[in-house]
Amino acid sequence: DKVKGKSNYILFKRASKEDILDQSELFKNNEILNLFLNKIPSISFIINEYRQIVYMNKYALEFSKINDLSEAIGKRVGELLNCIHSNEGKGGCGTSEACSYCGALNAFLTSHDGKPTVEDCQIILGPNKEAFDLRVWAHPTIYKGTQIYILTVKDIKHEKRSAVYERIFFHDLLNTITGLNLNIQMLKKKDCTDKDLFLERADYFVKNLIEEIQSHQILNAAENGDLLLRNTKINSIEFLKDILSFYEFQSKFNSKIIKIDVQSKNITFNSDTTIIKRIIKNMTINAIEATSKDDIITIGCKSDNNQIIFEVNNPGIMSKNIQLQLFKRSFSTKGHNRGLGTYSMKLLSSFIRGEIDFRTSKENGTTFFLSIPLNSVIQS
Image (cartoon, rainbow, N blue to C red):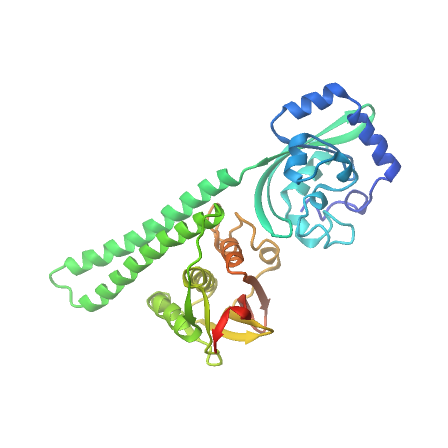
């Protein structure tokens, strides 16, 4: 781990205000350098050995949503961009536990050892917690006797999005169609004695196929800002029964048990059924994939602190490294370019003024929560 192997000197120490201003002047007064950096259509930062910004080009200013370089001087890149982890550690950006998984920090640390490098960085920025996929190049150099590092940043969201979408969509689609085809072939056999069973399975795979297509349509619309809300009356218990019914066959097939919490509250409220269903189904899929044979998955609903809270629990425990990377756009526990589950939950919940959270412990397993403001309730 690059981060754990570094001293407090690199991660925590900062240059004085006077030194920062002196370093910044080296670049601000260089007309040729300014012209060159501002002609290159990429986001560029120049940082010192303490990871503090001493210069940035106009594309970096635009990406950071600031008007003047003076607003950035002395800050670290995560602090300027308002990374959600930049204030968690005692030393600011780069010093929290989550920072050990930051591609931008690891790129800098490699370049600090004298090696130019490139890393992909999954980061969540700003008050709206917007997820970004960035590619960060870090190059060490010495300018007028001062050690500096040039960071070049590229937004690769669309590149990642295309790769992940295609891989997930075609992988899941192929699995579903293969399952459907196998059951149809069994039904075509003259000596088939379990036609009702194979019809039930075929029906499940057809429904799953429709769900997969709708899921990708919804997520694509959400990312493009084109998602239209369709508020309808929702009864919480009937909603949970619908979820249970959909996954009943899959849970039997996988020897998992899904049940509704007997303490679930019967609440009727107005919201978008499709979005809530997509979120809870993602939670349920994750729970099914995270559990072992004969494990029990519990889905439920309660009201607390002026909120309706849907929850999905499984007995598994989530490791710390996974907890620290949840909700990042391209992060997956399933392997390269495989999952958008927790990210999509977070994104979709924002459209219904909802919040996604989780708890995990040895005693109670892992529970994911969807909280929706109670002021949307119309009847209980």
